[in-house]
Image 1 (cartoon, rainbow, N blue to C red):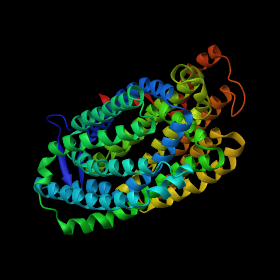
Image 2: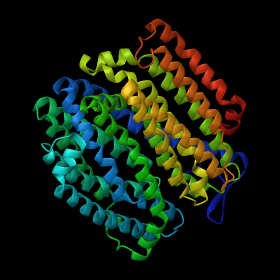
Image 3: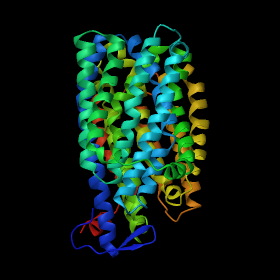
Length: 496
């Protein structure tokens, strides 16, 4: 939102603001809004760090691995239900001036998604035994597939309400809902798994009840869009614009196929270790989620600003400096973090943590590097980027998991993400003027990942003593700041 008294002029589809005030407004708005979502997503994860020890002491690694292997299906089917319509709706909403027409747009989105998810959920129930066999090697978890199908329905439709709130820039409202969602899920998990000893069924039921409750609450908040009749002409535009994105997101979910490869090559226990490592270090990835939630609707509205590019470039440099330092700092303490949080039988998960941390940060660079393609409405470029990601990450995982276990899977994820970011930079640079220091950013992350892995002994070695690792944190942070190329004067100039 602009501060009072700031001059705005509208030209075409973009918003043009004057001089330095434009860049300041862009940077402040991005940092402020991303911070809201980062807090909203990070705070509940602190509660999850309490939940994880309770849950891992209540269930075996095999049960946890089975849950992770089954849940592998959810991002895939969720993306099929989405079909890219959510991002397409955000893009079209930025071009619609009438509030009533925007509400009709999101009403159409709700109905389309509800129809799609109902069909997918029905297919999951019909083929529950085969799905269980495919993901876990046994049919005895077919009833868990039914619970997943039931959770999919409200969760998918809920996304439509969330995107409506994003389009209206009601970030605080959505942030509060996200906090409530995670807190409720963790509380129910503790109750059902730790308190009532429901094991795998408790893990699945907690997700189902959470999705149902949050759906009802958010539907009430967004009830005005439910009062509008769907516009079937709009649906055609949503499909045309969203289909390439749907393919992109579908390809993106296949990155999680590395867990299936781990299950085939090493068993569900290794899947559990890898998934646990991902969850413990996940707070670093939350900024990427916040970044996407804020950047997309904001840039669609303000991409005409003459100095917006300058603010985005500075934002990227700052993002890499801060989060590469954060990834390195957490990596240095990984053995001690895992020793405190989980039983000894889960400690193997720590080996993959450093690579996962830097892969999450690289994912943020990947997202920013391709914004030019979004602004030029060349969304098909993302499909190529996703294919490049898979073409690198999955073969590396397949090759290295037998040698290095879940460390090989982490390296595959990092290699695929960084290669995809380079491809994204090259492709988007051809269709839009947005130029960003992507290569420099990835070099910082690659160096940080290599140093962190070396300090922890690589795939099989022993870690350097804790005092030496702790001493290395500040030099790594300083090096990341200097390498990012951030100039204090430039920051002050934009924020004055």
